[in-house]
Image 1 (tube, rainbow, N blue to C red):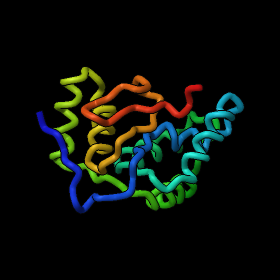
Image 2: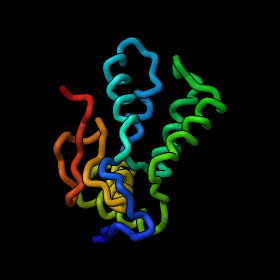
Image 3: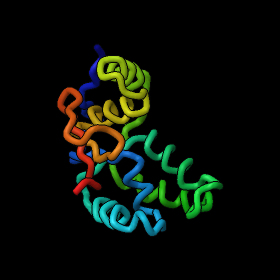
Image 4: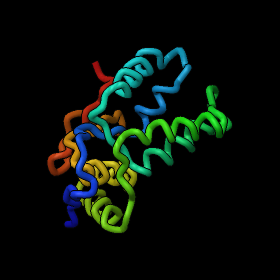
Length: 150
């Protein structure tokens, strides 16, 4: 098993790692997402957050989808990607990919979810804020927290 240790160059004050859905709820204008949008915006006001290049890529692609009712323009989404870069960002490299492949296999989750977990670990984050995995589940010490559950 490959486990990415927190690297000195990525040593941050980030404790919580943002999954893409938090960023997408923050921009949502869907009436059904009002509560989640408010929660996501409150989270983004915090300073103990980190994310990865993967999260920024997924955000851009999903936020600008032409079939999205509240799609952002390229300029709007690009500006938000730049704004989110105020947080520590984990790069994706071969060691992270290898660790994600091991995590995917060990826990039988998608590669993309495993890459989120391993990026969080690489940044030294203890928690991943996401609604995509089981709330409270621990992946070798990285715990999933769904901020949208009551």
